[in-house]
Length: 294
Image (cartoon, rainbow, N blue to C red; front, side, top):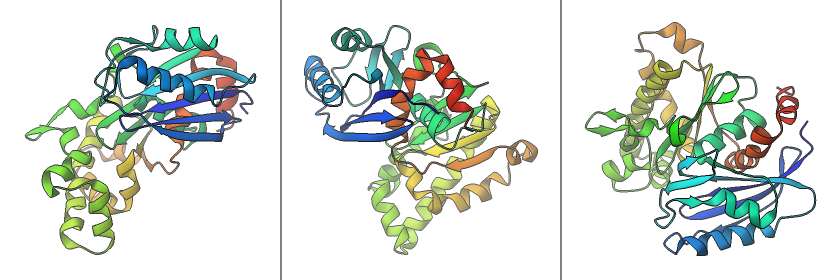
């Protein structure tokens, strides 16, 4: 099993989650406010300070997940959702030069996938899609045990695919509840759990839309498994029944029945996945050792 130590950072528009990962487990962690409307350098300085708080001589590298378009090889962040100043940020070079360690930058959906592949429910699968449904919709794609990133991390951006009068992001993320219920998915889930009929119906509709997104993923990549994560996966029990019922109408039932649909359960998976960028890109032998535990 993986005995190296890594630092992972999950950067969001609201918070930055820092974690020290050893043996595939988060042993130290903390969160800070991103304060996303500040200048580029101010946010980078806070990122450096957070990493410094966890750094020791055992750390083999740093992985950072960000929700945006990225040149993975160069480590350039071209655009980050909800952090307006982060455009054309040479984040990899800034961090690697400061810490004199290997640093890898990845799209947050790809980090979610790596977290599930290395340390979660995705170990057994070579062809896998990890679908993140929260503020928006994105996915990490694994083909033959390799990340399929595409140009500027665009592979897996299913949210932007046209659907009904808009796109999947407007129907399979928190935007759906804002548009239809004028409230957050979390608030509607709480009402549904308390027996509110209107909120329950909202999640029934949500489940139908998620089913159609799953069908699109199957048509696109034919994965062995789809892991559903993001904040809305916490309400899986509310939308799963109608999602399953809708999927019964999918014309290719043999393909559907051999595709595992799995709800993510570990809230630390995104930051674990950010840390996993290091062994994935740096140490092929470590990756192979991790996957032997599947």
